[in-house]
Image (cartoon, rainbow, N blue to C red):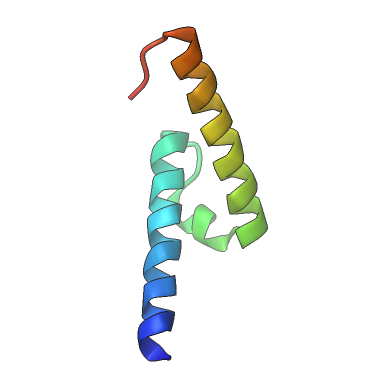
Length: 62
């Protein structure tokens, strides 16, 4: 059980760090950690949609 909780914690931290990177400073690590899972999931969906749009348009992205 402890191992499962540790893995879940690592996954949350990874998701939050990715969110902060995609937001390019628009959200701090502390702010992202305070968000609920639903809000983080919604932002993740928006990021994925925008990346897909950028890929289709041929514009560079990093």
